[in-house]
Length: 382
Image (tube, rainbow, N blue to C red; front, side, top):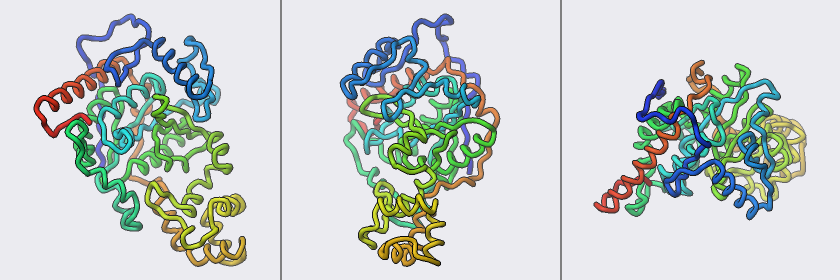
């Protein structure tokens, strides 16, 4: 079942002033509004303390975003390529502060995302569908098994269980919809697979794709026309991550990412590698073989007919071929989810209500928290 939520022509009274003063950004921590100059000054101090970095003057801050390695990535890069950007917002990971479910975390990252990253570019938000992980868990029971721990009870001031995340999808959908962002949720599919499917359709139409998510699974999609922008909690901002950053970090092309994780495993997602069965077959060996053969399937096919490496690697690749292919099926993002891109999702996003909508959202959270403290209720904003 496909669920798509979209609000159009939302009117909030009183309207925002027709002649804007200096841009304002919402500060989730203090529930106050800050001028752009104040936000820029605060960011400059943080950068200087963390990296000793020098940021550009305020007059050009709006034209750049900070990259994962401290470099500035110009937003005008799209103009150079002649391709417009379409953003995908992976919502679920933003709803946690560490391992604690939190609506406030969602509001924080979305407000920064709208005001400093996506601006008026099209944004498509995606939520995990019910039972989205079941297919992978049937293949590998340990897949994301640790995430079930999130159902444990929290103190009343923090209580917001994994089930509550699902029940809060209505609130999240309402906020995003009023900010003119379509929200996609497909039963039986994880958000990652929906994003991968729609990203392919966006690329076919000649756009560039930017995926807003902390999830490393999306690194298998990186290319010249696919970037990731990740939330950096310690710097309180989003940071672009491109194919150049990937190559610098991993010393290989993104096309090897999925195959490499199949061999070395993915502890976060509960996918074991083959090191415990083939000691010595680590990242260095895997990377060397994948650079030569290009993909896991090519490597396994070659190992089946000839020697491809040292004895321990050769034996592991032939003996555990099915094990590695199962890992591949678990970790590979699906590109064939039954969802079709709509033209109206690609238009410039109307942003004039963002500030009002997000302000009302934070006020609701604050009022709910006060009510919780007064009554000792189990309901909380997280």
